[in-house]
Length: 454
Image 1: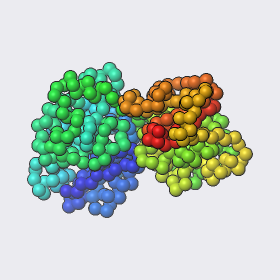
Image 2: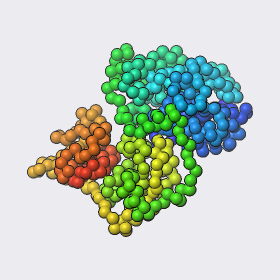
Image 3: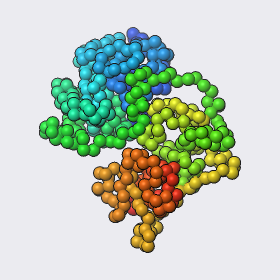
């Protein structure tokens, strides 16, 4: 049996390949939208992709099932309860498949979504007993899937389904099974995932806090008390996956390199400049109205999905060392297909054209302490979660989380009020400060180093 876990950087997503080189057949589970990695594995090992499984209707990334089927003619499989608008073969609990020496058995495990499944994998060259369980978004390493994404109307039902899938369906399975989830650290489909990419059922039963509540009431209270943020991109991604995502057009990336004149023309027509440079470079000088998501770190796509409206036409300001092709691929993974181009020459080209710029000031902790102790202290806006805010905060600060910030179309304070934005390290504060400036706040600064420095 051939088995491989494939990580999608920037999202915390895992997809899987199972197959049998002897028989020349292969299946792909939860494929990402850019499918070259699966095509390469199949060609390298002499296998033909015959099966495409989605463990559920994904919310955080656009499924690559349509792209993969168009390229390979393989069938798409999804649970019978998924109300998809494209041709697919429907799965039910107990269905079995054989891909040479690899055997697959379907378990219906609703809770994250009503159509969620897990897949038991056996290597028939060793034993018919399963050795791996692909848990989708049901069980992660160190956490479990969130039940709120399908909507408030069925939330109570989803929480109960989640509990039953974890304790009854998975509870009947042996401890030695290797757990391979659809997500790892960095995903917003859970909240406390480990950086480790796999585990075992036995170890999760022993150490996963979400599997160790004594009763359903305590479980429900815990899971609903601190749900992760829901990026605004999730709804449009769910819709794309239910309807069948559009196939990606083949186009020459050279056409997307645009001048400052063209970038400004797009901006004036409503395109949003998305500045992906590091936060300090952005603070020094940036295009008015642009939003900054520092791409020098890890999981940036969830943050882009949080703050950029789905379907927004984008003009990209790229950091050094990151190509347009790379960034376009990442954005397409979460459904941002309307990219007008990237600013050729970067911000230097904008500056050389003589156009207006904005900047942001960074205050060291010592300077902020002095300002707060003086006359007319600034307003401090803390954009961390309420739980983080309870643990440590700057006295007198306002806790304004991203979801509340995004609900506003105007500056939350008087336009010229001195405002200092803080978070734990400074990453989130930079995004929030760019949003505040775009909303018309004219006197915005950031705490350098965040509350770590404070």
